[in-house]
Length: 436
Image (cartoon, rainbow, N blue to C red; front, side, top):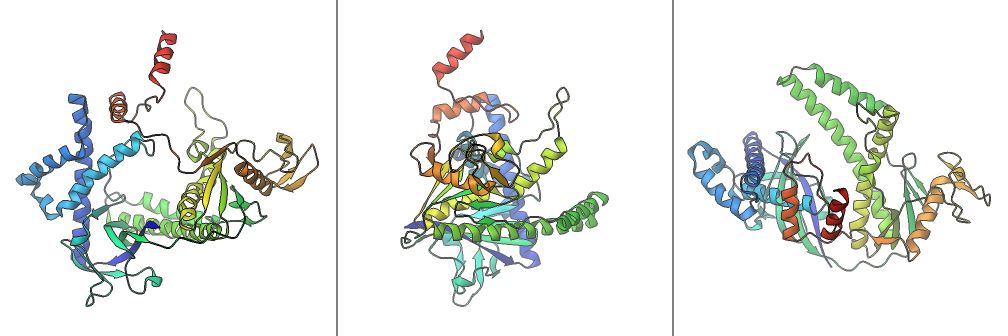
């Protein structure tokens, strides 16, 4: 079985190499924003959007201009990959995987990519713990994977992405390797209920709580935020306070990510079939502010609930379960979450009165009493094992054709407008006639 993985290591750069990385990231950001603006203006003028190949010809002209000569300091592939990122951003938008492309800001997710493995030197006998990157030379690397026995990655190297985080620069080695087919897990199927108070409840009766941000940590974050707000914009002290806040958030995110990896690895190795709910996190965490004409109710309470739901990282749990079940020979099933917390797992009676409180489920029909999250997990498992209401995770609607994609782009001149309808032309025509 061929799988793709990425190994990220921290780079130990010299002062000159750090300055060069900052320049490369700045050039990549400039080309990305220019390419995005070029596509928008090109559509407004001609009614058609440019493509990646056409934009690469303009890149040659820009680099030849004396006013833009600084772009020649960055590797050519880095600039080409920035234009390719613009093309992928549009593709992801039209296929419903992301929002409309936005401009990149300085200091936010600075990164650049080397796509040619032939230009990258790794695993040199005389350069242990180092990697050679174009126009950067040999760079020292802190190996974050002791199980690799000094190597930086496994399999065939595809590309290297250098990105800046709060505590420095990192290099991510994307590779492709062939692994043996994993033996099927011996454990039976399991249903998982994702919640706020209890992070994960399994149908086997296990309640799992992921480490969240404590009150003391929220106070620390608030103190750092007030410190940043009190510093003058553009000052060195403000930069120091911003970096300290970013490092604090990075540590909290790394702690949560580590626990999620351990949990999902354990579940996929122990259970061949895993059933979860098809939660629409984006819809569930919408703000309740409303408008000036119709203001929302209990806005503060809803904001706190949204923060608690996002802190549980339901989307990340689902993403890791998706690819790890494939690695371990299992499969993941998602089901409709409707009434899973109101239905009795013993008799099937559905009623809001069954849920006495957040943690207690007491069926008013048969008297079955259990933990509310465990009862919901059993309902999820039963629904996933049934032949109806089952959908395999990862299935998407068919990608739009090129004609449909052009129609989408013509209907969406600015990102503020709503996405175009995907209904059939006959249905859209009938709707328009009814409106008239």
